[in-house]
Image (tube, rainbow, N blue to C red):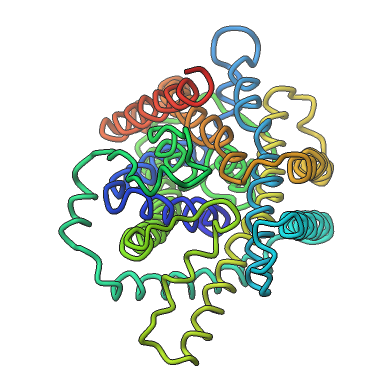
Length: 451
């Protein structure tokens, strides 16, 4: 989960938040990771205990047939091309322009053109790889490179002389300060509401339903718990034996999703806080922030320091470039495979006759749906990646996450016996996560598009 979702949210938006607001928003990153970790764990434990994807349960919610499933299709599948078109590929395209030494073209039409060309190459390469092979090999390479980058960022964060009292205050004191005067002079920030900016961070960190629905779909292939009897199949058991032996077995099964989710989101949180602290300690005093064509290049300053030898400066800048490339490219590539499961789970729950359609056909459908609109967004819009990702982050990574939490509370009460339902503390956590994510999604939509 961490390998696929660590990308723009952590490397771009966390460091951007630190650069713009200093240490003040560390609490936002902690809560975002906590809320989404609770959300994913609630869904994965349900799937392990029942052998059914939560969407199969939501298809049974009273009301018009499959209404909530279709709502999740609208809130999730509709927005996937935004991430895989003008968002991540364009970020990586601009990053490549800088990495190969074309700063002289910056802010020119040629720079924009080459950024789009690189983005197109990445989209086509990822589509080709998705159609001809699986994600396993790249995941191993990506895991290695992201691990190296994480170690370097931990070291950089520890040695950047952060203001530890400000770090502690940013972690425990909820506040959203106003923009500093220099931030208001950034062209892309003109007229951008600070609450919208922060809510986009909340949505971007850790992913959203477009990731989580597909990730739970991948659990079919892991075969945990009841999934070993329903592996790669669509199945829903409405009654669970409540004998002491069976309940004990179910509780043991819950360890796997707890360890998996806990590890993944802990890694995401560490990664996020490192970038946020480095943004606050290094970029904020220099009054520069990741924006426009420089969403991924400003952060090279996190590793390279003036007192280092020329050798180490070159070495570390290439560690950053290589690690960042694999983090973002791996996210793009992994997303096609992940979104294939998202598409399959959504459509098969909404239209049960599609359950017999092979995964390869869903893969082709997903590639077409994400690739073609993604290329159009890449070439036909002049908006920067942050502007393109803003509506997607608000809807699929904030608002839809709230809906997910509410629906999981219904599924837990409806389809699990009392002995295996979520404990009270987890139910409260799911409810609070749902209320906050849903409410903030509505606030961001109003402020960004209706106010």
